[in-house]
Amino acid sequence: MDKKKAAFFAGALLIIGALIHWAGAKGVAEIIASSNWRLLLLTVVVYVFTTLTSALRWQVLLKGLNIRAPIKVVWKAIFVGMFFNNVSPGAKGLGEFVRVYYISKKTGEPYGPTTASVMMDRILDLIPIGFMMILATLHVYHLGETILTAIIIFLDAVMMGFSALVIGLLMSEEKAHGAIWWIFRQYQKLSKAGAEKRRESFEKIDTVTIPTFQRDFKVLLKSRAYTLIAIGWSFVYWILTVARYYLVFFSIGQPIDPVSITVVLVVSMVVGMFAIIPGGAGIIEAVNTAVFTALGINPEYAVTGTILERLISYWAPTMVGSFVAADFKPEAAEEAIAGVEA
Image (cartoon, rainbow, N blue to C red; front, side):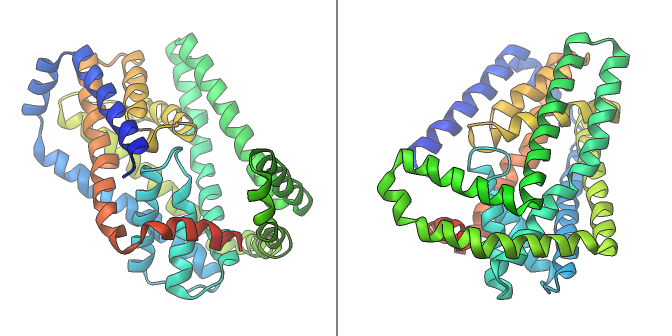
């Protein structure tokens, strides 16, 4: 890990430490000591099944493009991608390129179809997320939380606007063409020599990768059976995610209704998208704690539950992912991006 990332993670730990100090370190320690460890272990099992549903969803989409990949390979690709997402800024970034690269190398398939499967995988997630956004907005409005309602509505708008922009670029060859060369022009402003050096790569993206990707993406859209099955797995994924939060808080003696959990998830998703700290480490803990507290949860329980949940869903998987990705050489991350571009 380079010094910059190490500094980010050190900052994250400082934020977490500040949260514990704010809530009361003694109270947090007592809650952890008296928690139900069997339920926490069950939460870990639920998390494992959550990642499995993610792999099953992606495998269905790969099948829709006649790409045969064993579930073990797909599941491993999920963990490798998760690791790179967790150590890079933003909620979903480098890890998606790595997933494309990994599965293409393992199956021998070109990058166009595998990229289409990953993008469709992310887009189908928007359907259950859309339901969660509506549910969360109505819930905070019903509670009379005016400020929180305004924040949720704003975040809903950001999420929908960003999603519409991405889908528009994916579906329109003209817009995709314009976006590629807009990026190239911005690159030129930063480094004219570097941009010219990669002009050929941009031309390949424009004339080969994007048309192939859009063709395969439209094939998936027309594959109703595969799409519906994948959507079903998306709903299972988010139901299990809500269940994980519920079990964590239930294990520390502070049950939370599932609808309140969706509010926290909606806020953290949008914040995580734009977090400059890898995986939103520290930032997500602070945001989740703030929302739980705003919803009436005692600060000691809000901090404890949030930290335990993030330990299960972020910190531990990042360590596991580092072992799974051990045979994925550091330079392969750059090759992943270059490969997808080509």
